[in-house]
Length: 410
Picture 1 (tube, rainbow, N blue to C red):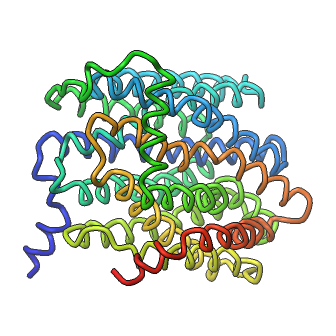
Picture 2: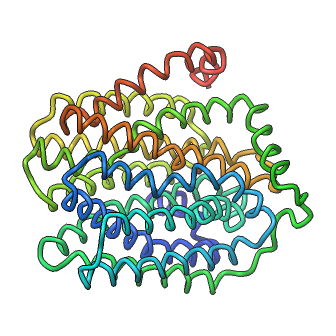
């Protein structure tokens, strides 16, 4: 029984290529979360404005909104390994630049925004490449397990990264956080070097960029299941994934605490997400679970809305865990909906739409959450997003009621 659990939960790690990729990311993504935590706290400390923190988040994700659909056509045409070697090297250089500016006390708000925009440009190519690369590394049989284990990396990093950042910020300096981030990208680069080369899945793809983008989008619009998942992602990812903007303001204005509390709340989100990721890794052998998909959407909206009543640190930690749990399963099932039964030659373009909905809509949510908290207080960040998400879901439910009934029966 114990052996069956382990073999089911970690089945995709039997692939040597995926194992090298996964281990490299385990280190790199921790560094990324150290950087994100330190950067968010640095900006809030410099500006004391939730709106300006929201603008920082928007600057990082606006390039994804503008570029990721076009990036998908490039991903389908070239080797994903080569693309990742280029993008990860770019992240490393940006990390070193940020380290130098902070260490020598030369950092300005506009410089942080410029680096965030540069990060977003690279991320426009990096994220959909990583998402679609999983299929090549594990194959169709272990796809859902590979998605779940890949997600577990990011959620483990959400726990460890902010915790490390909190300790470093409280006891040492912000500069060392950015230096750790820069060094962590070398782990992915080393892992990629040990992965076999894969040719592009569609080397003969038409060179008409706009036509290629339209092909991917049309495929999604004609597939009712993916289309519904896309609409759900548009609402939930825009409004329920603004933790980096909301939590530092909530920690300071509601809990009256500092950097360590902010980091601990982020880590609580990560713990909930990690538990969900491992559960989904084990359940991957059963395929997609559309009832659970719908249940966690309700859970995410309710938990965020209930934050209006939470003024206690311990209860806030518990709620962050619940929010992380629901959001992780939502992304896991959305990813599966986009990747299952998708033609290989369209995978990069399909996953670029997934990344657009997952991260490209963040600027809208970040600016909304930041503005709302500046006008009201940090207490309204989570419930303001939860209430609006619930309202926007009503027309989606009415429009797809027949398909939703079918999902509930399965």
